[in-house]
Image (cartoon, rainbow, N blue to C red; front, side):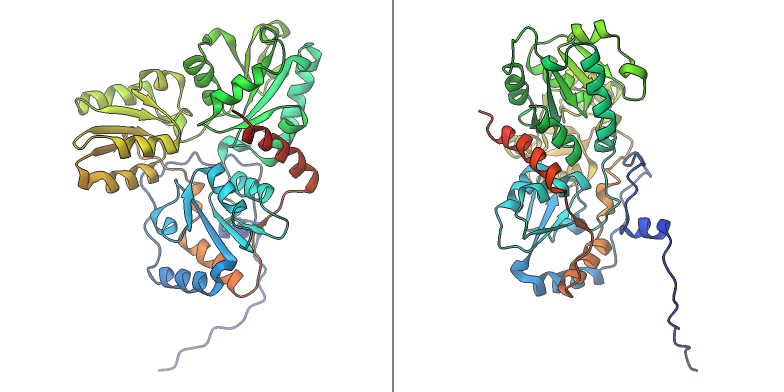
Length: 398
């Protein structure tokens, strides 16, 4: 019996096929909201050896960054792990690495490109790995918002503060208009700084793009009231707000949210307390205000990890953050007798983070090993300059 040899076909991939392969992007879609019910199954084990060989061949030329929300099969090849800003700074601290392979999402790779040297090339293994939150604020929408604030006569009193989870365009807008960037760890310091930029009683903050982090920081950490906050909806005329409402507000919150953290509810908190007596509820500040108010502890991804490290043996924890990280922490601390569960009964992971799977990582590493630069993320010079200005203001925060 003979086997027919496959013929070479001159077939050009369609835009949809390129999107599915992760070699094209769809900037108009809102991603990260699908919850298929469980984590994807592991990739072909043979890919592990291929990734190892390609990374070994590249040696010091490549530096692989792995965000905490990545799946385990990807994390095993990361040189460092962390949150988005920590990883971008880690990349900048490795100037000898020609290639920075960022296993995260698009805005993170942009930040890495902004902070690294011109000689370094940032690669995102799948260009479709976006962020639904970052996609909720476009440069055009934010420029229109500023026009609304100008017409209301308050633009000169407004200091923009943008969450790290935003596009390079939004970071550049922030830098251009005298604002700063923040992370979930230093949001209070960033807001304190912003209100010090003018007359405290008159200064306002435009917080982009996550309304929940802005509201939780203002109310929970700074003692403001919910009435001090208004939500600007970019899909409504004038943001759905009157000029009087804008003038009366201290915090103008952009109508954006994390599609994963936004799923946790007060019912989730009440249910887990009934199911697990004595449980400690620990949530990320991107969760809704009522969830944060009902939780025992609130903090960033790094805070969550450190809290569990310091937790006593035998303690019980329900964690309100991305599922990949929760499962990894549950496995890590199980030998110490710490019971760690996902806050919600419904399984929901960050589907855009999970686009960076082993096949995409192997393809990127093997391509680089063969001398082919793929999926490079490059921010234009003007955008980079203003975005870097905003990031530098954050780095200078006390």
